[in-house]
Length: 135
Length: 135
Length: 135
Length: 135
Image 1 (cartoon, chains in turn blue, brown, yellow, cyan):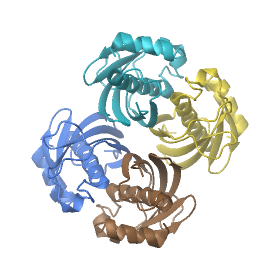
Image 2 (spheres, one colour):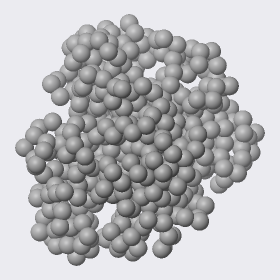
Image 3 (tube, chains in turn purple, green, yellow, blue):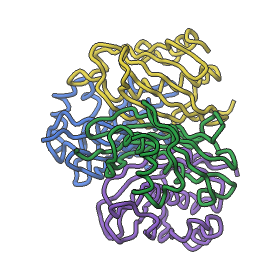
């Protein structure tokens, strides 16, 4: 699936969150997912909430898997870790750059660097394992 | 801070998420936080979204810290891990039972078991580290 | 498998590490594993090395799984997280208390609290996922 | 500190493990650490033990920190996660490639990809947080 197909899939299957996210790149190693930061993602002090960044990482890895195996809606996250390292820059979107490190028959593993758009130093990093149902 | 004080603090400081969460118990080892599961937390198939469970775990540990040191709004999550183990029961709330394992001067660590209300087998487990600003 | 059977299994299958470890309790929720702390486990300052504590947690969860499903040597760790919270007490063994939180057909999840023998405050906590081969 | 200085530091401060490890590269983003795989690292079936890979990741991040701030022996690991993804290739060393993602005043975060020497697909990934004592 390319970026357009992934965005169409998100809109159809995840209507509650799809307006906030868009796949901007799909490559051989993974994908880049953008979070359009809005008021619902912010916490006091103007930082982006942890659950919003978790959602960005989770969805980026999910999209990286789908880009390789097609629209398997029932892949589910089994394990995740995330480190919050810096406060995001104010007023800009967040980008989640995912590398798919393993894509096995039943388990996939990816990691994600989250950056404020235009800023080199990462805001957060995450890695997650997905269980893929038998096909 | 007791349960009433924690709930008042959440309402004042986190108005965007406070309506979904309520502290139901505060004890010497930790707290219990309830997530009133509603349509915004659900995913296709009726499961509760990963970011919603992450938010429950994160807030439960935050409340456990505040119950011991008072309203320090600026404590921030630095590291987190979460394992999703079972699908939540349909139509019931989720409870996050937090144990505060360490409360040091600058770092606190807690873990959380998430259960569907009334069901023994846990849905998820999580552990998180918070950085506490100098007081 | 009870404690004696688990210890015999470790001696037979893991001769390199078995002398350091012994299962001391097996219960319905999990097991307790003891690490006989010796010179090879220590680091400058007298603390127990991180890899030694990782090994204790890993083996405790493995034993908890075997206590329920029998001697399946090929179960393997897929994901792990560990938090180091306090320096161990000098000159005493470490105990890893494991709770088996999930035992599914293909994945098992457990967590472990590591304590210095006789000390209440935990030294470390860990959680791990194991993949169990088809039986 | 460059590779020679790091290797000399490991030999002096960690005599129990230093013979197994050697820093082979130090760059602006991080370091590469080699584990000379020997009999003590192996498990039944010829795989490298989880604690050995944990030690490789832990030490790689430690060396990456020291390469930037000098010989601070007392930096300690506070949180770690590791995913084991593939069985290592038989009979070859393991390389841990560390990126230092954050180096703050009190906390540092790095991640590590572990590969069998000469093999592209990673064996494991890990991320860790270190607490750095006041200087």
